[in-house]
Image 1 (cartoon, rainbow, N blue to C red):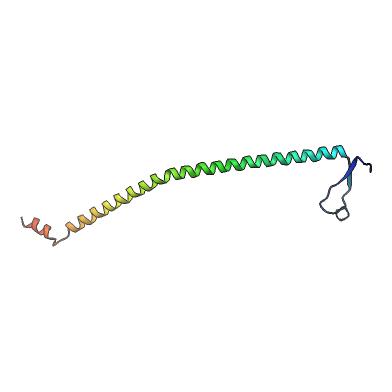
Image 2: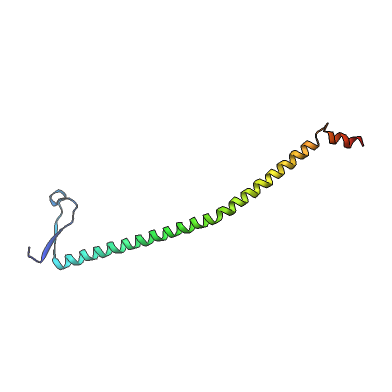
Length: 111
């Protein structure tokens, strides 16, 4: 092999273990392919970073929306609970006043 060439192996293990043949490239081609792989890796990393940033932004927006809605949900819950208590008190009151033998019922019946 000359000084301006290199050998690239197509195998993750030793050539003798996988029976891979070697490919001889000139140093210029090897550098060009290596640079292309580096640029591809950079592009992939940039796209992954952009996708992650977009997901983070969606999560932030969803969190802000939820935090904005929480006080309204609490107020609605209190209003519903208050109305439920009033309904229960009305029902108990009606049951109490209509109870036979109650002093006010007897008084009304005597008139």
